[in-house]
Amino acid sequence: MKTERQLLRGVRQLSTDALTEAYDRYSPELYTYAMRQLANAGLAEDCVAETYHRLLDAIHRGKGPKRYLRAYLYRTAHNWIMDNYRRPQTEGIAEVGPLEDGDSDAPGQGLEAATLRKELLEAMATLTADQRQVLVLRFVEEWSLADTARAMERSVGAVKTLQYRAVRALADALEHGD
Amino acid sequence: MMTAGQDAQQDQIRRQLQALRPVPPRAPKVVAERRAAFLRACRNATLLRGAACARSPRFRLAAIAIGLALLIVVSSGLTVSAAQTALPGDPLYAIKVGAEQVRLALTFNQAARAERMVARVVTRARELDLLAFSHPEQIRPADLERFSEQAEAAHSQLLILSQTDASLAETLLVRLQEATSLRQGVILGIDGEMPAKGPQLGEPQESRGNQPRGPERASGGSPQATLPTPQQEGAPDQVATSAPSGSGTNRRPVSVSAASPTPSGASETTGTPHRIAEPTLAGEAQYGASATPSSSGSGGQPPKPSAGGADSETGQQSS
Image (cartoon, rainbow over all chains, first blue to last red):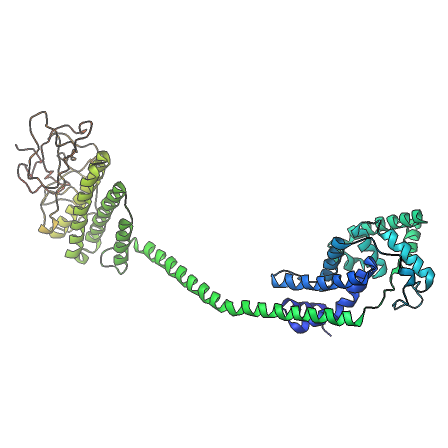
């Protein structure tokens, strides 16, 4: 399996193999990332497709990622989400079947979990796009501060500050929502 | 640095956000369709990139051709620059002369052409002078002929210029006369004694036999020195202020108002070639209205006019 740098080199050369591998490697997590913010499968699939098409277009124009492919993809996906974000449709969340989650002990199963997700999504809708992104990347995707900073094109210190404000804002939104 | 309360709040939010981790699975059919669409887009992008690469060899050839052309232009410029100090007989001398011709051909303004042509004559004179001092044997008849031809051409151009800018024509004529005087001295040095010293402008006139090198030679010299004489007019005893101080007491610049009658009644002689005579300027020439043609005759003076009426030795008017 290629390292990210090797993969990026092939992608920049528009190697079909490298592009295929990049799609297979990152499209599932991109879909998950979009889904966690949009709560809509169709929109999430559109987000993934558009992210990779923008990558192709940028490389063809001589632009695109220079060092970090993954961060670039997340940044592109975030930009698309910001452009197309709609208030999550949360009415049907409780009726959704078993959800995929690697951690069976995580609070993701059952009606209670569904209700919590609904509340979270509604509360997240009151945050700014950057606040939502930092919360999802740091606490849901569990990215490091450095990776988050790279994806958001901010410094680590700026990410910490943004994270602190996002936490307070979400806490306030959840408290007022109760 | 976060407080304990802030840490607790963050931990609580972190735990709550875990509820967002579970995500409904993707529909396999949708996944496959989206993947296939992306691979098609990849192939199209690769084809486009390949087409662009196929064009680049032509661009490379064009870039190479342009680079070679620039290299030729730059090296030509450097060669021309290096040829500026060339003397007759040097390998780069032909380039120097050729470059002068090109520059002159590209000069359309009459005043500028006159200046270039006079400057060219001055350059020829200095070349001959340098050669006469260092390698007189290197001077060929063709070099002297070239000098004569260029001096004639410059004189003709001054005639043309005098119709529009008499003042400049007069100034350039003085310069032309100095150049021809310089060469006159060179010729005498070649035909007579070896030059004792380098060219000296401003030296007093001396007899021909023991004359030092310089432009102040007596007129005459080898037949090869024959030049069209720039006509001189003015009072016989008037020294041109613009002439070199050592060019002889009888040196007189040509007055472009020669067509007007002189106070003494002397009129412009006819039959004198190479005469800048017409038209008359608004003011009389600064050297007087005397239309007496005279040659310098003496050392440093331009060669005497071919027509008669002038004393070639003293430059005095003989009417």
